[in-house]
Length: 163
Image (cartoon, one colour):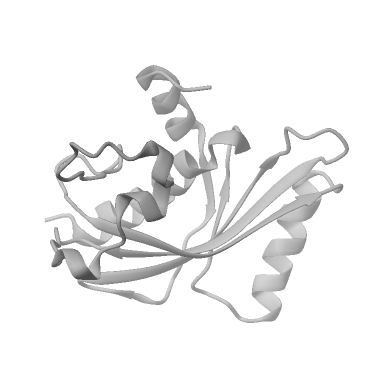
């Protein structure tokens, strides 16, 4: 199921950023660990929890082809058009600011506890570990959690690099 631009914008705007990192943002490059929570769409589970880490560079970077992952490595060989010479990806929230994003360490958990309980325990865990770098996000629709992660990244990049 694909989303229209208006539906994607609605998800983007309804994303709630509960906690922003207070350390670890370096001008020129960000490592943004996050926890994204929302109601699970799977029967038997109340909450979907996605934990990950995004690396964001506010500069547009073009690397030599031998250092880039190939399109088919990311999307599978059956989706590769042999006529395609190149492809660029961008995020909705980064309109006047080209950035490079790379996702690492993705952990997806389906949980039986309600979102409020998982949110509370996640915030407690971060506090116990004195983690001031990890953001916490509530996604309005976890099927499209990347839109909420984009909102989180965009809020950090816009605040830190607005000129």
